[in-house]
Length: 87
Image (cartoon, rainbow, N blue to C red):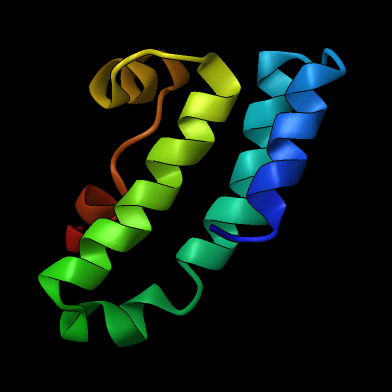
């Protein structure tokens, strides 16, 4: 878990809107998860890829609550991190 994920939970508890939570996620958390991706993504193991994806799943659960990962990505207009790396 990144140190930024618990802060996302705190923002949700105090009533920050879903749109603002998504902005925070994209600018503070996802940017770190994808930093220099074109350089390192080809050397990721399957386990490392799952670990990175798990962080996004946890963050989306913080934003939307208990919905499936696919449903959360769809409703927020996001793609999985592995899909973004494959482009």
